[in-house]
Length: 622
Image 1 (tube, helix red, strand yellow):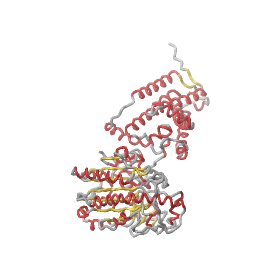
Image 2: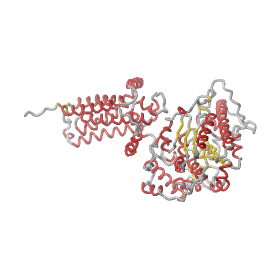
Image 3: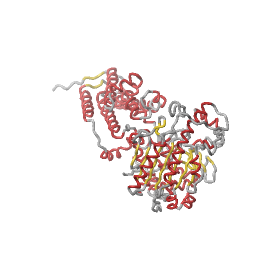
Image 4: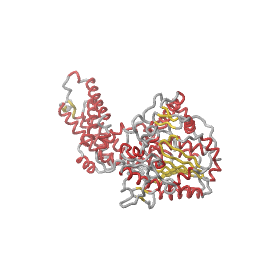
């Protein structure tokens, strides 16, 4: 019987076939996405570099497996199946969660398997069939068409195959760590909405964006981390007692600050933009100070993360990261503590649910109810953003509904009205901004920013005053927590702050530039339920605390400080070092230092290692 003769491609044709096959696999992977292929190709036509960036990793993977199998079609079959399967998974995840597939998802295969039953998943059967058939056809071609031996005799064996595969892999890794890691390159491409990650993936191409994500939103493994140690810390028993049955309302107001209290301003009691805040500070049932937040003039979601989880954004990585983007599993949070006590828990934000991936993140935080702009009826805008005034009614309605149901409420709202930029166009053409009284001279553009920003502060203060009046009149016990997420942006290179004299102040760079005001207030019913004076005295709150300690302090105030070992640890750490900000620590005696003693250093290391365990390993069901 005559032996079957396989046709063998010479090296030049093998390389040509690899290039053509890589292009075809790239097109098929893009076709698997939920958006029309013609739309993607239109973006690529306008920005041709995207063609190379999407095809390059696929081509290198194809070369890798071609070297190992010594057959370009077998290599193409495997790469086609793997890349397109990943692309289909991305399509399904976008449709289910409105979030793309990230490289870090490979570490969550167990969670993915258990979570699939919780979603109504519509598998794209036709797309899957095309991918499977294409893979089988490529494999069949590999049976009939092979590759001629490599021209260099010494490299024809397994040594040459391994060296070729290793070289392809090395080039791919270098490209991912350099070209694909470049934020400047990534941000240079035109997209419809740079903040909507699913749209960016669709427009720039899944292969390129997936490779870019290998080096974004990093979480560094802390030195000395041992999972067993963290598990033992987390499993510690605490001397918890039933929490006080008080309702807790937390409002984080966009860019809320007290910079207008600076001597540079000449406001009087008659035109004080923070009249309600100052009056509330003097209330016998209030405690106030400043929270030290993760970022300067931005990073709203990072402050949410720090306050609600007790972790620190700035400690997650040696490089800049986005806390909300590193989350991909259930986490301990204030929501879960109050859930365990039978509270109704909710989160409101008058922005899009995809921004900072809040729709998914707040589910992972344990919030039972989330309401975003698309679920808000007849929202009232001031300029381009939803007005603080509108949110007052939503919070009151949520409270009324909860009281009518006989439940207690833990609620968190993040506002948006006073978001930058602070230009005269912010509230529409012709808006009359009140003047800002100053004791110093500033440039015209800084004065404009101050007038626009201060108008937003007045509205934030009015919101606080309205909530104060409303809850003061209620018989149900309520604790109101009101604070800012970060200082406002007042020009490049901190121009506004420099002209106001802030940047010359001692401690500006280390702490003051990250400080926003907070106030915790209890109405009469809550003050009685909590034994206010003694409860506040027991908190031992200094004037400044890290945002990561604010939520834990609220838990302690309401009798829940020892409900979990985690929040109990945070309250103990706060008493030793009320502020931990990057390399600086503000000690309980007011000393600002960058050389903590061994005891404090050990506690901070434990905090970092415990946080890493929660982000990477701890399983929370429900």
